[in-house]
Structure formats: structure tokens, C-alpha cells
Length: 380
Image (tube, rainbow, N blue to C red; front, side):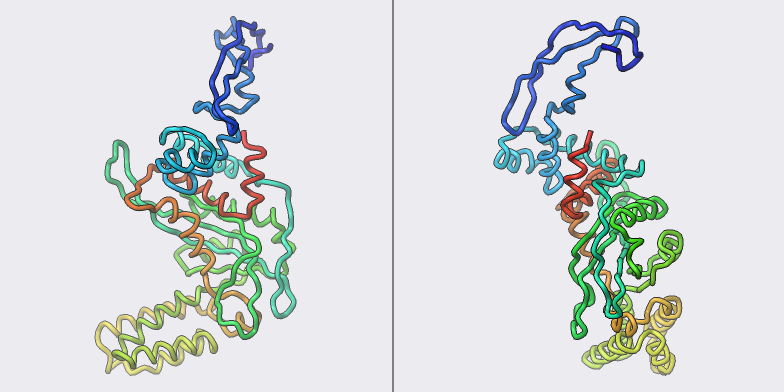
């Protein structure tokens, strides 16, 4: 055969045996070994053809191992899940290496511009004006890290982005956000620039250009206005109502104590939801600051600045009239289900490469089922 390294002639030497782990048990495979006299390197073409790893796993065994390692600790996956569900006997380090290698391949493929599976436009739900609506959202969640040899280091923030198609809200429905009929997650140690590029690719893959209305939900964090300007400039920006209501409620409880504070918070939040940020701003401007404590005055200044900064994203009466979501419950849930449930188990600390890899794989796993299948069907 031609040497894959230098393209010179490589001669057949012998058949070499290798024990591999598959879903139907341990197999002994005899493969031809070739050696190139020109470059001095050997080659076992069947290993590449069968996609065998250093852990001697078949592709199907790799997938099952990565699936187990994605859902629970590598130790439990090795000692319990794989043995019970697939009869696979691996050590913890093999599960770790297989899972992280799969996540690394996902991340590398995405970075090169890959999307998994055929392009398939979603049937975007319509709002009350009959327009089809596509949603996007971004958030971050923290994980604990460790340096080389277990050295103590600062934690990192994992970025979570999602393109989704939530169910429409009924006119009399109190829910601020609804379950999704289609979702694509991205998670990892992304910069905003890198995340935006990945989200645009996922959005195009599910036909977001065909949706008549784009809606971007966020908590108003630093840099997100620019992020949406660059990546989704046509989107209507909505500030998470719960985030805004939290600021308003804190102020109300500083202005008035006990039950009176609770009632005032409820009234202000009702005003914000049903009359909008502009109306609430006028209410807060009329407060008598002379009767406030120093702490309350500081919070009042903070809330006034916060509302003025975000007025263009706080027209909640109009959003509700259109039947749009007004809370970031979807992406907050994603932070928990995509990242925290696996990377934030008790006492768990991560290296940078491992955490990034597992975050990519978790996002793939928690996205629509066709994404996991498409990746493993074509995974090298």
C-alpha cells in the first residue's frame, strides 16, 4: 500500500492481533501491519478504518462510554453504568479520556464551521399577530477549576447560548416563559465573539432567516447589547422580567419595612409588567428621598440608572400583547441542565481542556436528539 505519511510504497509485514471492546463483548481482531522503508513508519490501516481509539473501543462503544461520562461522574460511569447497561468493563481514566476526546472533537468540528445533520427549517410558532418568531438567549454559569497537580486556581465562567422555538403563550397565561419544541445549545469556554459565530451557524441551520420576528432575551449583562448588534441586529431585545423585578423588589423592601415592603414590591412589579418601564420610572422619580435611609437612596439611584439604561428592552405590555416570552427561564434552565448538573457535582474541579470538552458534549446531548445522532454517525 502507499504510505499515508510520505506516499512511498509500504510493504506488508504481518498480521497483528489487538483486543477491542465492543457492544457485543470483547473481540480479538487480526489486522495487517505495513512498514515504509522510506520514512521508517508503520501503519495499521484497519485501526483508522474501524475508528478504534487508544482505549481500544469500537465506535459504538465509544459513543456509549461518552454518553455515560456525559451524564455522571467518570468513576460512577465506569464502575456502575457501563457495566450494568452495556457489559463494558473500563477503568475511570478510560471513561474520562473517551468522553473528553469526544467533546474535543465536537468543539473542533464546531470551530471549523461544522453543523451536524441536514439543514432543516423549524416550524416556528406564531405570535398573536400571526408572525413566526425565533428566539435566542445567552447566559453564563460558574464552575470550579484546578491547575496542574491539583493547584488552586480561580473558577471559570462557561458560556451557554441557545437558539430555540418556544411554545406560544395563551392570552390569559401567567407563565413568563414556555417549554421549547426545538432547541440548539452551545456551551463552553467561549468568548462572546466565538459564541456569536457559532450561534449564527446554528440559527441558519434551523432556518431562522425564515422566521418573521427575531427575539433576543437576556439579563442585560455587559457586552450583550453589542453582541446582539453584531450577530442578530434585527432582533427585538427583551430584558429578563424576573431580573428587573428583583431590582425593583429589593428597592421596595428598603423603602418600606415588613409587609408594607412586600405589598409595595408587588405593586411596582405589576406596574412594570402591565404598564412598562417608562411608567415605573415616573413612579420611582416621585419618591421622597428625604425619608429614605442611606442604603435605600443608594439603591434608588442604582435602580433608576438601571431602568433608564434598559428602557428600550422593558416594553413588557407590548411584548405580552404579542404573546412573546419575557423571561430568560429557558437559558437559566440550560445553565443548570447543560452545565451544572454535570460539571458542578459535589467537590468537582476541572482542568480547562476537560471542562470545555465536556461542556461541548453536554450541549450536544441536551439539544434536539437529532444532533447527537448526526455527530456520532459521522464522527471520526
